[in-house]
Length: 437
Image (cartoon, rainbow, N blue to C red; front, side):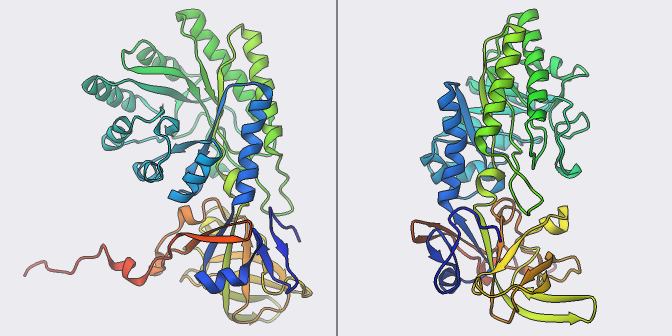
């Protein structure tokens, strides 16, 4: 059994997180419930930030908050000296409500609306990552009308394909994101931006995928992007000051995963960028990265209460939980794999294989298949590990399921940071039928 962060087993045989008994959390806040281990989040954040500082390299570590966005997580990110990247007006609104420094906010997205761009300018955020020519035109007009400067990066696809799931690979040429580096699109975008009066081009951004367990792909991306920066400097005199290599750093979901420590990713990135900058005789740019899953993924655990069960003789043992694909769509969407335990029976012998079924009205609503547990009974507490990224963030009200509560734990204390939705919340936007009256 692999435990994460501050997870432990107490004298009662219960799983604890952050020094707090998970059965106490379930009794206090109900289930399903997302529990975040803040100590692990902080440890990962410092692993990225401190490595740059020790190397004496100017950098920004931006939390890729699409993984999990809430007022409280942004406030903790600020405590750890992180920047933040957002991909929608809703995320931008939330991070600003958290009091996060606007100068450390980066705005991504392949189809930012005019309203969202106004929001970015009015909030005086730190940077907009430009994704397409339509956006360039929108930004030019907006910046000129407002007579306001804005730092920008050009997002490029460097043609590097990381070893990852096809659905989450974004660095190759055939992607909905960014300007292609090899077919002239990036050069054309550069020509439209580098001498603009208000749009202050700082450099380039790329993102090559997700759940990456090696550093070679980042080195190859750095090689291609720095070469293009050097080309632009040679032909126009433009000196890029920022290279954003994105994120995608992997975490351990199951024993098959072998992630690297944050310092390893950062050290290899620094060496790769230094090597390419020296080879092309350009100044070392500021290096930006965007960890998301690697900050919150294994810091999050979902607690469920077990209800019904079903035995299919010689086929499968099912146990059903009080959540499912409404709070974790990834198994159905990506065939994602997870591990879990009975949090109230940690010291009992695990000798029965179960499939964990959700309660949603879909045959594919299965959280984990073939999980070995102690004998499971109604009212037992199931803990599913590594659900901190893209669990709550992708949660839905399918079947009119209320979204779960979110709780932070640290040093023996716990705090509710996102309330559980109520039944009244489910209908608060509904209007009665009046057509034809």
